[in-house]
Amino acid sequence: MPIATPEVYAEMLDRAKAGGFAYPAINVTSSQTLNAALRGFAEAESDGIIQVSTGGAEYLSGSTVKDMVTGATALAEYARVVAAKYPVTVALHTDHCPKDKLDGFMRPLVDISLERVSRGLDPLFQSHMWDGSAVPLEENLEIAKELLDKCARARIIMEMEIGVVGGEEDGVVGEMNEKLYTTTGDALATAEAVGVGDQGRYMLAATFGNVHGVYKPGHVKLRPSVLKEIQEAVGAKFGKDKPFDLVFHGGSGSLLEEIHEAISYGVVKMNIDTDTQYAFTRPVADHMFRNYDGVLKVDGDVGNKKTYDPRSWGKSAEAGMAARVTEACEHLKSSGTKLT
Image (cartoon, rainbow, N blue to C red; front, top):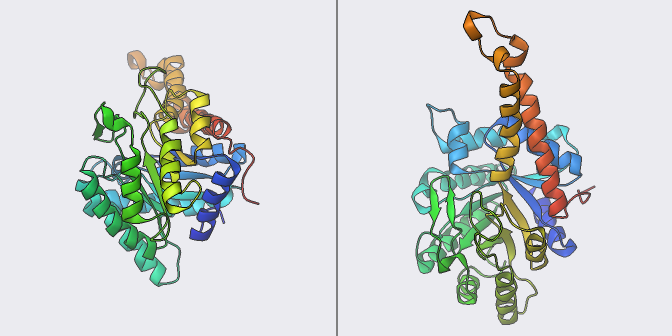
């Protein structure tokens, strides 16, 4: 059962919170990056999460087709076939979906899962993210409530965001201001609007100084204690220890102690994209520089088919990214925790 059922996915998240670890959620944009992620999880003996963004889904459909639902569906179906050969369990997730892309991405995908569930099948994806960080909190929560109800009926876990992750990812831009830090007031309003699991299970991306993309430690001050504060405030009101299943976005450049502190407050999922993109591309650059006279037909020569065959550099790219996924599992303490 390499693709998690709804019940197994819930068990995975419960085990992570209880066991003090988090799952790497690896963004993929192709069959090869998917294979790299699966290989990395397997080598770490860790279950994990494979995810695709709106831009990644569009890319997966073909550069002239540019249809997010087609690309996401193709990835999910392909993943079901190839993941069956790996000794780990993975969940499929869609990443940031802002308001203007709901009708072209998240809502149609949830509809596909509703139809599948009506036929006794599992949902196409195990979770979807609604990113309402660019709209006022009241509107964010109103939309979240509607989407959570639909996701629950489709046996899907929803992810939502309060606060703003700085930087840019697939056209979603977060400003660098005080909204980088979620307040306890925002967290309490969220629990009031969508419950703490009683209206449908969801994960919460609460922000504590996170920034998408590449940045060096110290550029933005991460305050993981923000997560502790919102868990305690909401937990006290609703009588539940660590009521939120938290998600860590924008982790590139984070110190390991900051990651571990965030996990201790209930982070069960950490998104990883920038670092694995680099890990995939770096070996390709190395191959091209070392074999420039083979991959190019220099001065009218014929080149070297063995070096310009995409498989020759693709294997190195896959190995590089897989190693970074394995490293992420070690950092998040999920290594060796796979379901038996």
